[in-house]
Image (cartoon, rainbow, N blue to C red; front, side, top):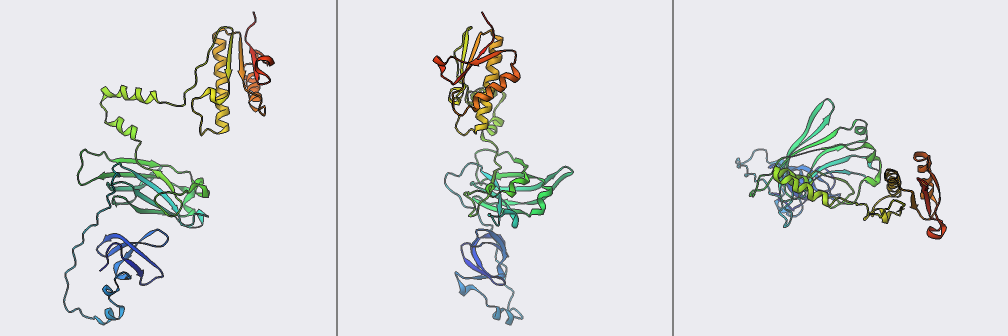
Amino acid sequence: MIKVGDKVKFLNDVGGGVVTGFVNKNTVNVEGDDGFEVPCLIRELVNVSAPELNVSSTARSQQETPAAVQPEPEFIEPKGEIINGKNAAEFYFCFVPTNPKNPLSGEIELYLVNDSNYTVLFNYSYIKTDGVEAIKQGSVRSNSREKIDALVQEDFSDLPDFGFQLIYFRETESEWNQPMVKKFRVNPVKFYKESTFRENSYFKKNALVLKITSDTFQTELDKLTQDDFKKVVKAKESVEAPKRKERKRNAEEMVIDLHITELLDESEGLSNREILDIQMDAVESEMNLAIKNHTKRVVFIHGVGQGILKQEVTNLLKRKFKKYYFQDASFKEYGYGATMVILRKG
């Protein structure tokens, strides 16, 4: 007899592992040294933890006729692990290359990870232009994972969208959970890059981990009545970020500091290209506002630095506001780091 947690060896192959669960009364899942689970027939395993329970191959060969027909043991579906605090529905679609250093040299295995105390029933499909092809259906116990597919390099030339339909539940619930539907479109180029696959909490190997679970804020919106909707939208808008800082203006002159810390309250995580785009948007919008308000002069403070921002400001003014004269602003007030645009005289 084999039970969950037993160490076993393969009877007809090299290697072994630890029994992690039952697929049915004749088959168990075995996790090998590489961290991956494979289904194995119980009769093809040798129990290392309790060798006295093994029936030797010699003894089996001598049993030409059984003395009596033994009733088959009742199969009890194993329950998943329940972990304190894992009460949120957290489900993930994971791509795990068998060779993380060169992902396309072998298979990329696809898993459905259930990182919650729920039991999940799933339907996994390919979504193509000519229809939907159901690939696998089944269940995933709480706080466990299930291999659902595998891809090789030839598959990436015509990669479908991946679709999930999930029903999740617990034995006792305080409310009804709506089924979950999610579609993924993955750019095949990602699989050519080792950097796509990263360390994660679910596999020993690097993996691409995609979240199936719906956005929490949107889920709560779906539960609201129409009367509450405006309140929630208002609350969401109140935390929109980043916000542009307010600037003082008058009819004579507008002074716009283009340093990103002056344009945004929060700029962490922005690339140099994104920062420059925000600065150029600020120049264009402030120029349009100044023209509308009949402002005399606009001064853009860009600093000295390497001159990149100043050159971009100059190019924008020449391209979109070429009718207006501009020059270096007062050295006494701004040093070499500002450009003044003259919108009107007098």
